[in-house]
Length: 235
Image (cartoon, rainbow, N blue to C red; front, top):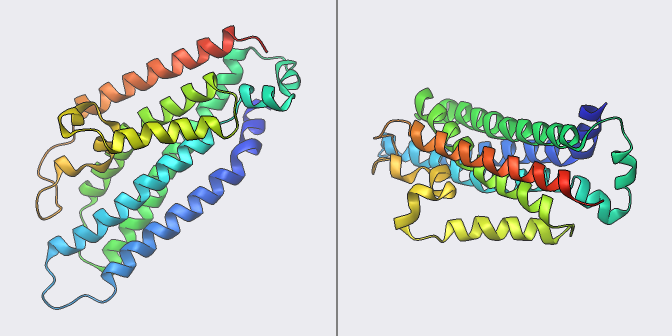
């Protein structure tokens, strides 16, 4: 029942995000590939794919943030948290279901639009490297996990329906404007993947598994802190 409740609360945002990201990502690649000139080289088609990746990255951040907003604090602000807390489940269980739903939807929002965009690129152009598509999805998830973790933590600290998303978006903007010297700890830099591409927009470095793993560990810490805060909060 808790999983179904979480799905009902987020399905509209999730389905709109999924449809929008898939459609816009595919359209971006198709638009750039549809009228190729004879002198276009392979790097142009990978530029088109990278352009779609940048669009999906931006939309993923917005979608993941909105999906992880809400929860018990939002219900408290609306005066309905007592109904949820009356269910035969602990706060940890309630948070676990919400986190599982949000992060599961985030995975789908990374994999499905990117896969559809790659198929479009393969059919309309010459960007057909499955490894590069897989690489980009790993970077999107590895960096995005921290963004999602911050959004979850903010939603556990701030009750405002509009304040919490704005704080989360503010964090993403800070990451986008961080100096290059902080690139290794910048989740947005990992999501973009510019450091792993050469001048031809094709991969020149291996998947940074250590970096991705470190980001996932940071995310796990943020999730743990969020759960503890909600467990100890007075509703």
